[in-house]
Image (spheres, rainbow, N blue to C red):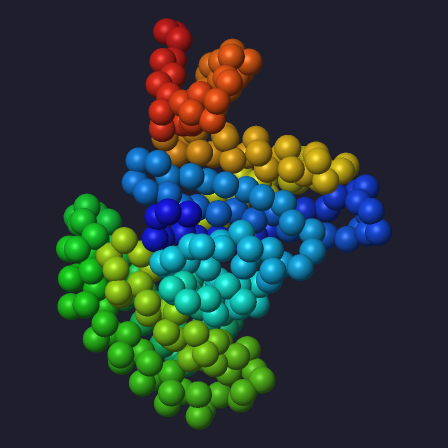
Amino acid sequence: MSYDIASCDATTLQVLKEPNRLAQTKSYVYCMRGGSPGKDVVLYDYNEVEHKDYIKNWFEGFKGYIEVDADPFFDTLMNQEGVYEVNCNAHARRKFEPIAQAAKHKGLAKEAMRYYKQLYQIERQAKEEKLGARQRQELRLTNSKPLLDEFHRWLLESKLKALPQSPLGKAIQYCLNHWSGLTRYLEDGRLAFDNNGTERKIKPFVMARKNFLFAATQPGADALCMHFSLVQTAKNHGLDPYHYYAKILKKIPHCQTVEDYEKLLPWNLKVPLPEA
Protein backbone atom coordinates (compact mmCIF):
# COMPACT_ATOMS: atom_id res chain seq x y z
CA MET A 1 0.00 0.00 0.00
CA SER A 2 2.95 2.33 0.50
CA TYR A 3 4.20 1.88 -3.07
CA ASP A 4 2.60 3.97 -5.82
CA ILE A 5 1.97 1.24 -8.41
CA ALA A 6 -0.38 -1.73 -7.98
CA SER A 7 -2.44 -3.99 -10.19
CA CYS A 8 -5.56 -6.05 -9.70
CA ASP A 9 -7.56 -8.73 -11.49
CA ALA A 10 -10.18 -11.27 -10.45
CA THR A 11 -11.52 -14.72 -11.20
CA THR A 12 -14.53 -16.65 -9.96
CA LEU A 13 -14.70 -19.15 -7.11
CA GLN A 14 -17.63 -21.26 -5.99
CA VAL A 15 -18.10 -21.66 -2.22
CA LEU A 16 -20.68 -24.26 -1.23
CA LYS A 17 -21.64 -23.44 2.35
CA GLU A 18 -22.15 -19.74 2.90
CA PRO A 19 -25.02 -18.18 4.89
CA ASN A 20 -27.93 -16.96 2.75
CA ARG A 21 -26.24 -17.95 -0.51
CA LEU A 22 -26.93 -20.81 -2.89
CA ALA A 23 -24.14 -23.32 -3.49
CA GLN A 24 -24.26 -22.46 -7.20
CA THR A 25 -23.54 -18.77 -6.57
CA LYS A 26 -20.12 -17.70 -7.83
CA SER A 27 -17.95 -15.35 -5.82
CA TYR A 28 -14.57 -13.86 -6.68
CA VAL A 29 -10.93 -14.24 -5.78
CA TYR A 30 -8.94 -11.07 -6.38
CA CYS A 31 -5.26 -11.08 -7.23
CA MET A 32 -3.39 -7.93 -6.21
CA ARG A 33 0.23 -7.20 -7.13
CA GLY A 34 2.24 -4.39 -5.62
CA GLY A 35 5.06 -3.40 -3.34
CA SER A 36 8.38 -1.72 -3.93
CA PRO A 37 11.08 -3.47 -5.98
CA GLY A 38 12.62 -6.23 -3.90
CA LYS A 39 9.53 -6.41 -1.65
CA ASP A 40 6.91 -7.10 -4.30
CA VAL A 41 3.87 -9.09 -3.22
CA VAL A 42 1.33 -11.29 -4.97
CA LEU A 43 -1.77 -11.33 -2.77
CA TYR A 44 -4.99 -13.28 -3.28
CA ASP A 45 -8.17 -12.39 -1.38
CA TYR A 46 -11.68 -13.81 -1.37
CA ASN A 47 -14.82 -11.68 -1.59
CA GLU A 48 -18.42 -12.73 -2.08
CA VAL A 49 -20.51 -9.52 -2.23
CA GLU A 50 -20.44 -5.73 -2.80
CA HIS A 51 -17.42 -5.80 -5.07
CA LYS A 52 -17.19 -2.04 -5.67
CA ASP A 53 -17.13 -1.32 -1.92
CA TYR A 54 -14.71 -4.20 -1.35
CA ILE A 55 -12.22 -2.79 -3.87
CA LYS A 56 -12.61 0.76 -2.54
CA ASN A 57 -12.07 -0.36 1.08
CA TRP A 58 -9.20 -2.68 0.25
CA PHE A 59 -7.25 0.11 -1.45
CA GLU A 60 -8.22 2.77 1.11
CA GLY A 61 -5.35 5.21 1.52
CA PHE A 62 -3.59 4.10 -1.66
CA LYS A 63 -2.15 6.86 -3.83
CA GLY A 64 -0.78 6.22 -7.28
CA TYR A 65 -1.43 4.10 -10.36
CA ILE A 66 -3.56 0.95 -10.42
CA GLU A 67 -3.34 -1.31 -13.46
CA VAL A 68 -6.73 -2.94 -14.09
CA ASP A 69 -9.14 -3.88 -16.83
CA ALA A 70 -12.19 -1.67 -17.36
CA ASP A 71 -14.48 -3.75 -15.15
CA PRO A 72 -17.19 -1.70 -13.34
CA PHE A 73 -15.91 -3.21 -10.05
CA PHE A 74 -13.16 -0.56 -10.10
CA ASP A 75 -15.31 2.51 -10.86
CA THR A 76 -15.73 3.67 -7.24
CA LEU A 77 -12.01 3.29 -6.53
CA MET A 78 -11.05 5.38 -9.55
CA ASN A 79 -13.16 8.27 -8.27
CA GLN A 80 -10.87 8.64 -5.26
CA GLU A 81 -8.41 11.53 -5.26
CA GLY A 82 -4.85 10.55 -6.09
CA VAL A 83 -5.77 7.21 -7.72
CA TYR A 84 -5.04 6.91 -11.43
CA GLU A 85 -6.44 4.17 -13.64
CA VAL A 86 -4.11 2.37 -16.04
CA ASN A 87 -6.17 0.20 -18.37
CA CYS A 88 -5.05 -3.01 -20.02
CA ASN A 89 -4.28 -2.73 -23.73
CA ALA A 90 -4.41 -6.51 -24.08
CA HIS A 91 -8.13 -6.37 -23.25
CA ALA A 92 -8.68 -3.71 -25.91
CA ARG A 93 -6.69 -5.68 -28.48
CA ARG A 94 -8.63 -8.91 -27.80
CA LYS A 95 -11.88 -7.24 -28.81
CA PHE A 96 -10.54 -6.79 -32.35
CA GLU A 97 -8.74 -10.14 -32.61
CA PRO A 98 -11.66 -12.55 -33.33
CA ILE A 99 -13.14 -10.08 -35.84
CA ALA A 100 -9.82 -9.82 -37.66
CA GLN A 101 -9.39 -13.61 -37.67
CA ALA A 102 -12.85 -14.11 -39.17
CA ALA A 103 -12.33 -11.50 -41.89
CA LYS A 104 -11.21 -12.88 -45.26
CA HIS A 105 -9.96 -9.55 -46.55
CA LYS A 106 -8.41 -6.40 -45.17
CA GLY A 107 -10.73 -4.42 -42.92
CA LEU A 108 -10.98 -2.16 -39.90
CA ALA A 109 -10.30 -4.90 -37.34
CA LYS A 110 -7.11 -5.96 -39.10
CA GLU A 111 -6.01 -2.34 -39.22
CA ALA A 112 -6.56 -2.05 -35.45
CA MET A 113 -4.48 -5.20 -34.97
CA ARG A 114 -1.73 -3.63 -37.07
CA TYR A 115 -1.55 -0.68 -34.69
CA TYR A 116 -1.36 -2.97 -31.69
CA LYS A 117 1.33 -5.08 -33.34
CA GLN A 118 3.51 -2.00 -33.70
CA LEU A 119 2.85 -0.89 -30.12
CA TYR A 120 3.78 -4.34 -28.79
CA GLN A 121 6.96 -4.30 -30.88
CA ILE A 122 8.03 -1.14 -29.08
CA GLU A 123 7.38 -2.80 -25.70
CA ARG A 124 9.33 -5.86 -26.85
CA GLN A 125 12.25 -3.63 -27.84
CA ALA A 126 12.30 -2.06 -24.37
CA LYS A 127 12.34 -5.51 -22.77
CA GLU A 128 15.03 -6.94 -25.04
CA GLU A 129 17.26 -3.90 -24.48
CA LYS A 130 16.58 -4.12 -20.71
CA LEU A 131 15.75 -0.43 -20.51
CA GLY A 132 15.28 1.28 -17.17
CA ALA A 133 12.06 3.10 -16.32
CA ARG A 134 13.26 6.50 -17.56
CA GLN A 135 14.67 5.06 -20.78
CA ARG A 136 11.46 3.10 -21.38
CA GLN A 137 9.41 6.25 -20.94
CA GLU A 138 11.60 8.14 -23.40
CA LEU A 139 11.24 5.32 -25.95
CA ARG A 140 7.47 5.34 -25.52
CA LEU A 141 7.19 9.12 -25.88
CA THR A 142 9.36 9.04 -28.99
CA ASN A 143 7.86 6.00 -30.72
CA SER A 144 4.58 5.00 -29.06
CA LYS A 145 2.92 8.38 -28.53
CA PRO A 146 2.88 9.42 -32.23
CA LEU A 147 1.52 5.98 -33.08
CA LEU A 148 -1.18 6.26 -30.40
CA ASP A 149 -2.15 9.72 -31.64
CA GLU A 150 -2.54 8.28 -35.13
CA PHE A 151 -4.50 5.31 -33.77
CA HIS A 152 -6.87 7.65 -31.90
CA ARG A 153 -7.61 9.63 -35.07
CA TRP A 154 -8.20 6.34 -36.88
CA LEU A 155 -10.64 5.20 -34.15
CA LEU A 156 -12.66 8.42 -34.45
CA GLU A 157 -12.84 8.05 -38.24
CA SER A 158 -13.63 4.33 -38.09
CA LYS A 159 -16.40 4.84 -35.55
CA LEU A 160 -18.44 6.47 -38.33
CA LYS A 161 -18.01 3.39 -40.55
CA ALA A 162 -19.03 0.68 -38.08
CA LEU A 163 -22.48 -0.16 -36.73
CA PRO A 164 -22.53 0.97 -33.07
CA GLN A 165 -23.92 -2.34 -31.71
CA SER A 166 -21.76 -4.59 -33.89
CA PRO A 167 -18.73 -6.33 -32.31
CA LEU A 168 -16.46 -4.00 -34.29
CA GLY A 169 -18.42 -0.91 -33.26
CA LYS A 170 -18.25 -1.98 -29.61
CA ALA A 171 -14.50 -2.66 -29.86
CA ILE A 172 -13.87 0.81 -31.27
CA GLN A 173 -16.10 2.48 -28.68
CA TYR A 174 -14.38 0.55 -25.87
CA CYS A 175 -11.03 2.04 -26.89
CA LEU A 176 -12.48 5.55 -27.14
CA ASN A 177 -14.31 5.27 -23.80
CA HIS A 178 -11.14 4.20 -21.98
CA TRP A 179 -8.54 6.09 -24.00
CA SER A 180 -7.09 8.03 -21.06
CA GLY A 181 -6.55 4.80 -19.12
CA LEU A 182 -5.17 2.93 -22.14
CA THR A 183 -2.57 5.64 -22.77
CA ARG A 184 -1.68 6.49 -19.16
CA TYR A 185 1.27 4.08 -19.31
CA LEU A 186 3.09 6.86 -21.19
CA GLU A 187 3.32 8.86 -17.95
CA ASP A 188 5.74 6.54 -16.15
CA GLY A 189 8.20 3.99 -17.50
CA ARG A 190 7.46 1.67 -14.58
CA LEU A 191 3.90 1.16 -15.79
CA ALA A 192 2.96 -1.86 -17.88
CA PHE A 193 1.40 -1.64 -21.34
CA ASP A 194 -1.10 -4.32 -20.30
CA ASN A 195 -2.17 -6.24 -17.22
CA ASN A 196 -0.85 -9.58 -18.46
CA GLY A 197 1.54 -9.80 -15.50
CA THR A 198 -1.39 -10.07 -13.11
CA GLU A 199 -3.31 -12.36 -15.46
CA ARG A 200 -0.31 -14.71 -15.40
CA LYS A 201 -0.63 -14.85 -11.60
CA ILE A 202 -4.35 -15.56 -11.89
CA LYS A 203 -3.66 -18.49 -14.24
CA PRO A 204 -2.16 -20.86 -11.58
CA PHE A 205 -5.31 -20.36 -9.50
CA VAL A 206 -7.56 -21.04 -12.50
CA MET A 207 -5.59 -24.20 -13.36
CA ALA A 208 -5.77 -25.43 -9.77
CA ARG A 209 -9.50 -24.65 -9.63
CA LYS A 210 -10.06 -27.15 -12.45
CA ASN A 211 -8.94 -29.79 -9.95
CA PHE A 212 -10.34 -28.65 -6.60
CA LEU A 213 -13.49 -27.16 -8.26
CA PHE A 214 -14.73 -25.21 -5.22
CA ALA A 215 -14.21 -24.35 -1.58
CA ALA A 216 -16.55 -25.86 1.00
CA THR A 217 -16.66 -22.82 3.32
CA GLN A 218 -15.55 -19.21 3.45
CA PRO A 219 -12.71 -20.00 5.92
CA GLY A 220 -11.58 -22.60 3.40
CA ALA A 221 -11.61 -19.99 0.62
CA ASP A 222 -9.63 -17.61 2.85
CA ALA A 223 -7.05 -20.31 3.63
CA LEU A 224 -6.79 -21.15 -0.07
CA CYS A 225 -5.99 -17.49 -0.84
CA MET A 226 -3.43 -17.30 1.97
CA HIS A 227 -1.52 -20.30 0.66
CA PHE A 228 -1.61 -19.06 -2.93
CA SER A 229 -0.28 -15.70 -1.73
CA LEU A 230 2.66 -17.28 0.08
CA VAL A 231 3.50 -19.70 -2.72
CA GLN A 232 3.35 -17.17 -5.56
CA THR A 233 5.20 -14.46 -3.63
CA ALA A 234 7.90 -16.96 -2.67
CA LYS A 235 8.29 -17.95 -6.33
CA ASN A 236 8.53 -14.26 -7.25
CA HIS A 237 11.57 -14.01 -5.00
CA GLY A 238 13.28 -17.08 -6.40
CA LEU A 239 12.37 -19.42 -3.53
CA ASP A 240 11.22 -22.99 -3.89
CA PRO A 241 7.75 -23.01 -2.25
CA TYR A 242 8.16 -26.43 -0.64
CA HIS A 243 11.46 -25.56 1.08
CA TYR A 244 10.13 -22.09 1.99
CA TYR A 245 7.13 -23.69 3.72
CA ALA A 246 9.33 -26.25 5.46
CA LYS A 247 11.41 -23.45 6.94
CA ILE A 248 8.63 -21.09 8.03
CA LEU A 249 6.57 -23.88 9.60
CA LYS A 250 9.54 -24.66 11.86
CA LYS A 251 9.94 -21.00 12.82
CA ILE A 252 6.31 -19.84 13.19
CA PRO A 253 5.78 -21.51 16.63
CA HIS A 254 8.63 -19.36 18.00
CA CYS A 255 7.26 -16.02 16.68
CA GLN A 256 6.08 -13.66 19.40
CA THR A 257 6.01 -10.22 17.72
CA VAL A 258 5.00 -8.76 14.38
CA GLU A 259 8.68 -8.28 13.65
CA ASP A 260 9.27 -12.01 14.16
CA TYR A 261 6.67 -12.80 11.50
CA GLU A 262 8.04 -10.14 9.15
CA LYS A 263 11.41 -11.88 9.22
CA LEU A 264 9.70 -14.85 7.57
CA LEU A 265 8.47 -12.88 4.55
CA PRO A 266 10.01 -14.18 1.32
CA TRP A 267 12.31 -11.21 0.75
CA ASN A 268 13.71 -11.48 4.30
CA LEU A 269 14.39 -15.19 4.31
CA LYS A 270 17.11 -17.13 2.53
CA VAL A 271 16.18 -20.73 1.93
CA PRO A 272 19.13 -22.84 0.81
CA LEU A 273 18.04 -25.75 -1.32
CA PRO A 274 19.28 -29.20 -0.27
CA GLU A 275 22.00 -30.67 -2.40
CA ALA A 276 20.78 -33.07 -5.07
